[in-house]
Image (cartoon, rainbow, N blue to C red):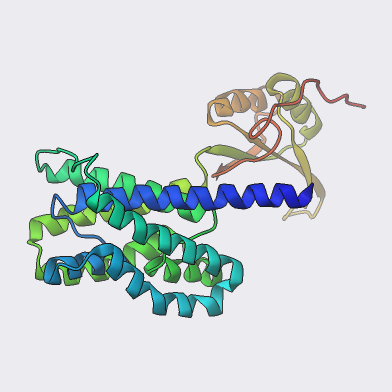
Length: 297
């Protein structure tokens, strides 16, 4: 049973990485190249080689990724390396595929560079975000970004933006400053969308509630909002008295209800609200509980 589940998860993982690579390659071939927008990382270098020597980006991307994959082997382990090789192969294939497919021609944007930059960033960021969310990379500077994320905790979007800026500077050899600025716009949108997709599309809010009436507040959170909660043991910093901190996660639209609930019970309660990029479990990734918790005084 476990083996069957693992095989299913792996197939989903491989499919989503391939889908992400397809979307990213589509953005490059159908939006960036026709509108003379550059790109960062290895893809940007592949575009440089295309403009300088008319080399197919699919072929140059595959060749340029070989040394980076070797470097990545030392840091990423066999599983992540295998997924990276799959992502690299998929990206190279789809770069070739979308460049030669005649079913879909370039997207007609009337060469509006602003719209082109935003769309390129949206498509590319969504594609790369999918690849990272499912544990892969598209090779190239994505490998470096993944290593920085694993070893130093640097957000992948920020690493990609810095690496892209370096490659884009070289791209000034064939781009004018106007196209370069809109390419930077695309890179900024790409970085934001990549982090958004990777961190999770469901934004939730976490609350840390410190109150002397913690049991009353907890009961009302359960009864009125149908949300679970956890008591965290804490200690007051001034007089070192033991305290119980309520931790719960709610949807953004429930924040005002929680505020009003707490205000009615304890106007002096201390509440800290934090962003939760992804929430898994009851009430978020599967059905909420049907019955309330039975409380004992």
